[in-house]
Image (cartoon, rainbow, N blue to C red):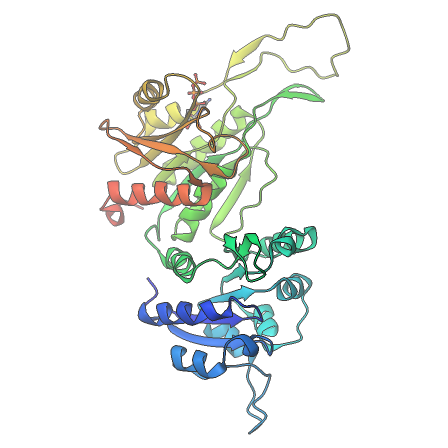
Length: 403
Ligand code: CTP
């Protein structure tokens, strides 16, 4: 995926700078053209000579070359790059990036870059945990940057904990998956989050869904080139990829209407939302006042996945989720058939690290031919990658789809 790509590597002053030698070597091995920009402090950890030799390009540190006055244009560097990876990113540089401070070439290039930016933090565990740093990291995410989370292990300080820069191989994986355009030209529909079923002006019925799994799937499909319509119930999440268009809905009925409208022009649909199965038969216009008891009559909502399954064409892929507490496999197989899905992703609430609100998930993919594939517990982002890889494998001729 990286052959011929222009990768700009920004090195800030942390001990993990030594690992960037391996990163650059791996990138060059993959066929990427690599340029390196370093901060003054980074030069103390790894020499420009090492980095220039490995990247096969001169290193940029200052705004100009003091020998001959030649200008190092941050704008040109930013435009040249197909991706900018800042590794290691120290707490200091992350803070400056979040605040828009531009006191070195690495930072001015960050502000000028038009390409996606990947940030691999590295610092001591207490610094990484500090609210100031995590807030700055969240700010970078809100700018659209991808954070390659630090890993846990032994740190330069001698302490054990989270703060080690991700391994060079992990960083290369991130870049590879960014440049994977397997879904280019395809349209995808993803539902995510809970729905709110209104009882009266102040109350509703809902569930614990955070929307994280659906958003991760939308991001992965978008990163791999799909145009994604994300029909989302109320969540605190923000889709970041420019290929994602979010359609906000509140109730199951609104989600149904939007999905029915969008599905005919989609090639892939992944139904990840935790749609409320019941909605109040009547919605009160005024707040229900205190009384000794209250019975609310509920009526069934429309089953969106089943409705899409009914109108699905042969050139469309429809996937659903099953969240189960008992008889997991049997129930999932039944839902797969009843909703005419191409495959279903089962997650059990009985598995630790699975289900609502957590950042990990443990899934089994069940295909319409009955095959079951079991995956380990992983971060939801990696689960999303497994699901999109499955879509690719199952439908090898995805490029033959009618658009
Ligand atoms: N789903 C849907 N519309 C509904 C209910 C569910 O589209 N009204 C979709 C979900 O997004 C998921 C799949 O159907 O992809 C299964 O959802 P789940 O809540 O596990 O099962 P239900 O079909 O609601 O059945 P039950 O609640 O009885 O387990």
